[in-house]
Image (cartoon, rainbow, N blue to C red):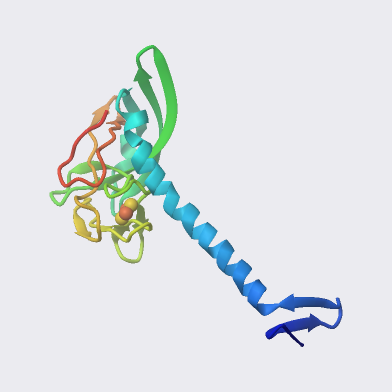
Length: 184
Ligand code: FES
């Protein structure tokens, strides 16, 4: 059916008239809103970052038993419960880190926060590398930068073994700068 030069579809069962132009228009609107929301997350995190990170001190956090990380044939992701001391306040939050090996075979703990704009980096099983889904930065298994817009490699975190446990001091770093700069 034609109406005002626009083709209309008629559903015979429901007797509903659907305009193709308005259907595709709605689809594009939903798509744009979704893309906008995805892009807004790292941007907001980047802009607001100094506000919540600068004045906090993180204490040592437990990653897990050392024996759990004896066979590091590939990096292991570990969730962290963080306690941050900000003056008289104690703030609980959570983060994730990767326990991996350096090129020399030493244990390393890497932040999962992308140094570019703060998205969460994932380990790619088949590719044997780290990959940031936001803008496609790629890192080697020891965190070295391979390609993509990140200005440096993944951020290593201070760690130590104590009473058979692996501990980490989680730190935040300034994003999108080539030299590592600790914010807290
Ligand atoms: S946030 Fe841009 S590459 Fe990771």
